[in-house]
Image (cartoon, rainbow, N blue to C red; front, side):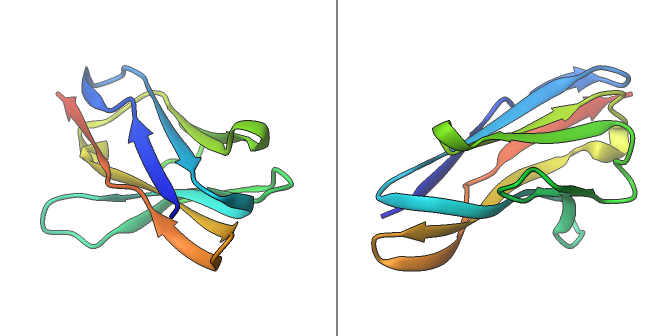
Amino acid sequence: QVQLVESGGGLVQAGGSLRLSCAASGSIFRINDMGWYRQAPGKQRELVAVITSGGSTMYGDSVKGRFTISRDNGKNTVYLQMNSLKPEDTAVYYCNGDVVASHGLGHEWGQGTQVTVSS
């Protein structure tokens, strides 16, 4: 069984920074794309950033230039450095990964971590 566990969320003032981490565990052979999504109350889940196993990245328009996604393949961990945070960044942040494990390929999700940005 594969688990993704996020950490690093919390309450921060506008203009501040937070760093999220997401560690995958289990019988993992490799992880292809890893990404961060977020969902604010009353809104649909949206893409924040994605990173391939080779390190190529893609960002949602609302976070370009402020957020940076990175990963440590040896630790099966993906990070999201969030700078210049705005109140509209408030949401539950979820990580996911395309995981090749002993049971096959799965699109796995973490349980989410709350990020709240106060004005």
